[in-house]
View: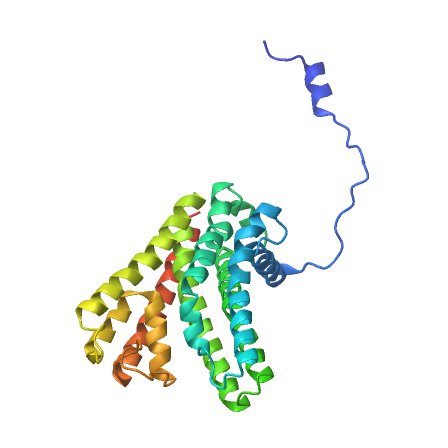
Length: 301
């Protein structure tokens, strides 16, 4: 039975109550501010800041261990009076590669998989921030965090060298080379880890997949390098092409060749100037492709 005219009239007449809410009349900070805020929040989250104490343990351990190792090496160098550096800056980054990978594999899913699992990504896009802004801020935060993990122990080694009265010019140049290597490692490996972490909402799967890609590719490259004669006292130059199979070895070989750090035939390096160009091209291609596929992934959300 249709409602009576009187009932319809009562329903159509409503009262608006003023409960004290006021409209926002302040400045609109816009996309740039929102993107910077997301970058800062993601960078803090990469180190467990602003999260529970349990969440801080692993990232802080992987950040602190390289610093402690560098401090121990510096102490030995100073107290023994050794006039030669125990390890070169770029070589040190390569030596702590497993710690860096653990940090990357554990924290990339924190920045990407967690938002997918809790379905909070659409909330970001309800604001002025765009999908491209989201990917840009997250990638910059992950790469920055990885760079910090590698750069801080290098600064410890540099300060120790100066305290030990080692040549200022030599160590300043090699520190800059080490920082350049850290940038390449951070950008390339962060792009790969970002693509993997953004592909699954399950953090455990993301951690395992990232470690699998980095470790397995390194093992395969090492096997190919050994089969090609890289373990010999004077290995053939062709053996160094195996570095193109692993992101870590790729950067290591490129840096060693370009900056003249090859002091022994067994040191991984790009076999010649032309090979260095190919190594650089692969670094750029892997980084750009990983970023592009991640951006495409979020355009579908």
